[in-house]
Image 1 (cartoon, rainbow, N blue to C red):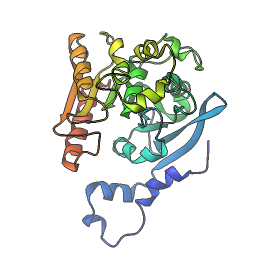
Image 2 (image 1 turned 90 degrees about the vertical axis):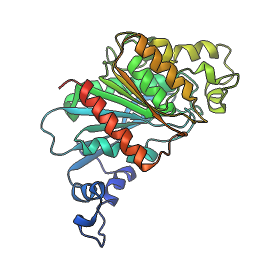
Image 3 (image 1 turned 180 degrees about the vertical axis):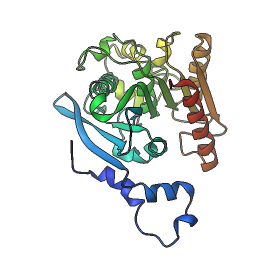
Image 4 (image 1 turned 60 degrees about the horizontal axis):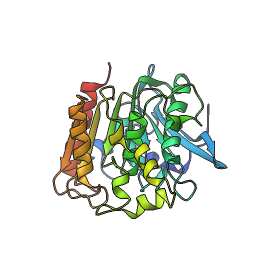
Amino acid sequence: MTRKLSSVALILALFSLPVAPTLAQLSESAAWTATVQNDFRVVSDITYLRANGKELKLDVYQSRNADGPVPTFIYYHGGGWVGGSKEANVLRLLPYLEQGWAVVNVQYRLGDVSLAPAAVEDSLCALRWIARNAEQYGFDTDRLVVSGNSAGGHLALTTGMLPADSDLGRQCLGAETPRVAAIVNWYGITDVGDLLEGINQKSYAVRWLGSMPDRMEIANRISPLNYVTQELPPIITIHGDADPTVPYAQAVRLHQALDRAEVANQLLTVPAGRHGGFAADEMRRIYASVFKFLEQNLPN
């Protein structure tokens, strides 16, 4: 299947532009991007769902040299469920591409198109699309890892934690939502209701739930903390303890609940870290921990 590369695909190509230093003088990551631009293909803007008159898209990034199914990283962008885009987050995918994984970058309905729980429904439908098309794109359905930052972290958690027969997947094609192998949660919301009123009230959450009379009931239905069971996949959470946007306490509560349920999990705390934008040395530490966690917990 061949498609024209979109503007998001060109971001990878930018790393291959001629520069004065030799490859030996480049950093390790820059040298990698400068030499492998022809090793990957991007299939962009594939429609995985039509909802509210809108075609929802995803992009697939994969190695041209893959020999059989490969681990697949599924990413949901942040933006408080009311902003952001998949295109703005392409660089977050590079560490997984460098490891030889396939990557799926997902768009979902924002709050100005449809209020909660639409984004949760879309995220589940994207996962089902991936399972249905695994053979065509070389996705290893035994090694599906969902991830996202902020609101995207929340969507990754709900996608991986909701029961397979959840009624939130009713509009999706396919028989059931496949089980994910692990969740990488970057400072995601774990208790939506906590953000609707009181000292932790956040405007983005209020906007996403709107003035629906049953908004607290909906918030409970889509709060990851309400779905902690022993059957969950391994979960690693990254969160700054000075985050002004998503309370760090929510990450702690999730970690404690997972420990009580004896679910393999890890909480990486960024000291004095705010809502992302972590220093380079912290990011190196985080990614080393993330890939170690995945290596220990994914099936071979």
